[in-house]
Length: 586
Image (cartoon, rainbow, N blue to C red; front, side, top):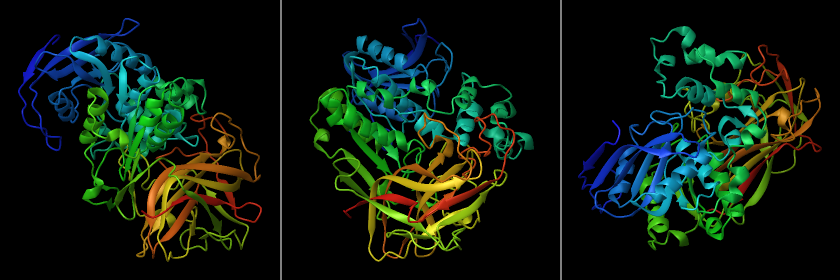
């Protein structure tokens, strides 16, 4: 129904949202918002019922303006005196145009911001609201610097669809790309995912069977019965090329003129976007206001805030009211209220291990001691029953460890940074089931006598070889408790053909030792006395990532696999080590 208008008399706050609400509101539905190319995107507008001009928030979504769960915050913002525009992005639900994820959001975001600022109910100050895809579109709009955009609050959002969404270290995020892109989002309306997971699903359509499809460039047909163009584009563009640069916020963050508050989780698949958005804006923002106004908060969460994630309950202190934080942010920047948010430390992190919030003046934390911890063994580090050691002194003992990686028997995903794919485990999980495998090298420190606090980026410097032209190396940082449970706290992967960079693909010389730097994003954790630090090294994490077939063929094209024989070196000349960001214990 076009042009529909509803009046709401809502005098009480939604549960868990800030109180002291006085506005009654109206909702105008199916409002046409014209884009520069003539396409019309449709939105609902929530605003106070009284006449006036109000600070304006925009939410742009591919999931439908009617999606359950989004309305409490939207209504509460309107009750607090904001006009809120909730819009279907191009090609989704009621909006015109073709659906091509991520590729039209910069111009469409700019046009929507400037349209909103011209409306008789707007005071010309515009902010943006939302998480995940709804957060990424904020960065896309901000890089276009629309004149009336005043501040953004991207939640659990990517800043590079290549680096921190569908690829990490050059390895393809299969579970996400299949579950989100092919199964749920191939068309104008979001598909349910139930037929791949429910007991009544036929065996050939069950997720646990579909994921084994090779070559990958026909997995869309196998799972959805149609060719999904953008999914096939992702496969064709396996390196960081012009296809990905065209939609990269990180390559254009120097154009952002407004403050941004990032919000993320240590186990979120888009953690890299949370970190890189903050550090990029802080260092390169186009204005002093953008650089000084950048803020970041990271909790012990996945793709959404919760007290318990994975198998760990972080306590009630882990929960934060996102709405209250967004309201303070927007009250300051859009309403001009001096509530002190601009004078608070810009970085707030949840420190796992002690389960407390800490504030810092920047990321990396000022005064961080980046400390190398070395792999060592007697040559038999295979599994947690082996002799692998993690030590603070230079390596000693045998020069190397070896294992066999068989793509037909990959290490299964168990916890980590993922979401939105299939019903396999994410978050912090006890790693002992995978650490019992012979194709996982396990390096464990001595029992700690003093607490060791880390908060910052984590990297692995691995010296390794393989007997083929390409393979993967997967790293996990693990906190081992006195009872033996082993909890993953950070992870990273590198597709070895990208050893010179994500835009410099080069196949390997078989059996040649390479120095590989593996980005493990970051974490904040206190290893307590009685605990041990552990690093796991393997070559697969399936189905979170696709199986590297070890053939050197292009992503998606290989229908065959080969078994790879891997060597990890830890000699005086090839000192494989993890770099931990050691900080003072708060």
